[in-house]
Length: 369
Image (cartoon, rainbow, N blue to C red; front, side, top):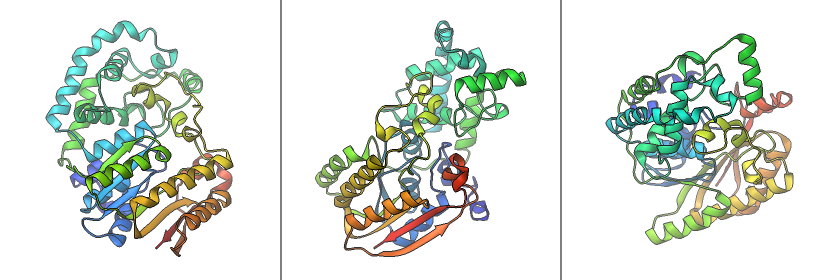
């Protein structure tokens, strides 16, 4: 895309902005444009559906401050790493240390499901088990940064990842993957995981790394956390946000927990895809719950916003998702007017990926102030 050419890898910001393959993410140039237009230096920006933290990262690079919430640990690890990356030497030392510890985990490889033996060579399995067990990614910046960079190329094209041939953005189901690899006679690539990861780290840090300290990305459910965040910000006397910039999950499109099962395994999850019981961690296929979820999040976002804040929401153009989002925003912010409605039809959307019947619907930007 032409708009992105000047943003490619020439600065620390551009090298780190794209950390983490993840669906339903804003393009960085889009978040940059919106934040520049509707805020000034020192303003706060809120994103209650933060994904991999693109809104917060863009806000930080523009001299603003961001507050966000993300329910998926994978998106949170990516986003938090972009905001608080550790020093390169420390990350490299951590990877070498994991390599030294990996042989201790060889005895556990045989207990992994057969998928893992088709997907990774034995030394990679050892290394992954060590990383899964030893990296404290929730609390330590060094561990989280190492984990984030490992997650990026955990699977993808076999010539440039740790895995047998897979999509990088979405993990295939084990049964399908095994059958597909067997039919094509594909074996796991011969990888030294330490050497592989050190090369990835060298590339990521080649232009340096951004350092932000005031931006905050919380891990959890916005319907539960936003009230607590309000109390925390009040105690710290943090000013309210000038802009809400977000894109809620679309109705009945995909299950981000199921589709990222392999990366979530590395973060401590089960070694197979799993449909979770919590509706907020599924496909958002129940209309009643979808409406309730959106209403709750936007209602609880309201106390965190200045009264004259701009509400900028990108949503799906399909009828139910669009109508529901528009109605709820109008109800939650009755004093604001819909000032702008822009219908876009990108060459690729998450909706078209999962439902080719709606490929022409595109997305809609709703802007209230």
